[in-house]
Image (cartoon, rainbow, N blue to C red; front, side, top):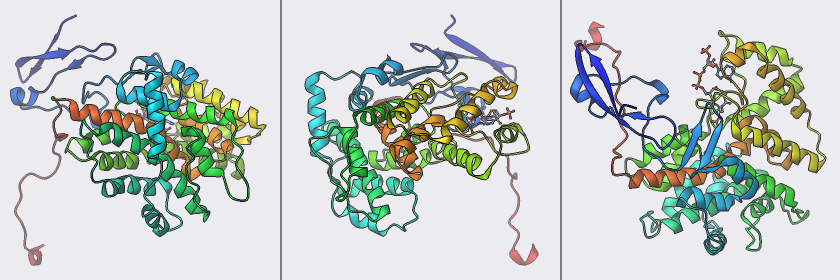
Length: 426
Ligand code: ACO
């Protein structure tokens, strides 16, 4: 295979080097393009633009493959824990038993949040969305821990603090939103068990931990741990490219994840299913609207920028969802509606022609609902899972000598030069 691409612009032919990949798309190196031709590339949404070289996650959208550091998502979901997967994503290798134990001890040591942060929580209006609160609180960590600047020396402490505290912060925001007493983390519980306990234990009704739910939560977070250059990760890298601290960079990623087209889809799916269930909207009418070019409505939880086949995470999530509902003996009419929607959509020519299949968000909300997680916390759950990926990608960007300040160009479409007209003459 040739390792140069030739491009002819206005009769002038230039050669552009091709960057080899280990697997998947190769990259045409266009760094000299503007200088040599006076042209830039035009790629809204960056669907054809490689912004970095990365060794963290590999996806094949046609074959439905996802691997973290080379290990298939299916193997991790079957055998690993979220903490072990987070270690892998961030450090590049699976931990030894000793390394994993050390990480668990550190996660416990850093699990408390500064008591002063609770004052912040108390002052958000009651109706605030937990994603807005989470984004603000993660940004605020920089003020509470100014000594930590994620240099090589203290990077481990920074990332462990972030992973540990985000779980505590999320559960505190839930407790405060309900007007309940905050539940502190317990050193004798694992990461996921601790989260469930902090969310649901109350002085009057002790939370009974069920190991199936702890496992299901591990799987849920493993499936979300990284997804290469998705919208929120690209934001984290972009903000970090200005040498912005890790807390502010990740806070920006949380804001990006909040959107309905990205992580907010898990909440939007449930809303769509509730509308069908409670307002008597017919499934076939929902499909009809999704196909109508003149209607902005989309079938939430369907479609993906990269996957043009069934999202491999969605396959695992679907099974995880069924398992949790079975174990809890929980009947949810929304699951029946979701399965009916999927059946109709995957055999409909529109969805087949557009390569639209369920993505990870399609079944995740139903599982979270059965676990007792409130709908407005769904995207927060996604954010906790995605944190290892954001950390790893922020770090990789910082360490990559080829990276520069993110600064795309534009094809200008406004006025050419024109005179200023004084206000009385307009
Ligand atoms: N329902 C109906 N039609 C859809 C859907 C959908 N869910 N998704 C894409 N399409 C159609 C578009 O209308 C468009 O049709 P056209 O070519 O005939 O005009 C075509 O498929 C391509 O759509 P784009 O928006 O260009 O595709 P893009 O790659 O930009 O979008 C996205 C990907 C945003 C995920 C889209 O599929 C979508 O909006 N899905 C619903 C929201 C969702 O589930 N988001 C979660 C994604 S996974 C994640 O972030 C964790």
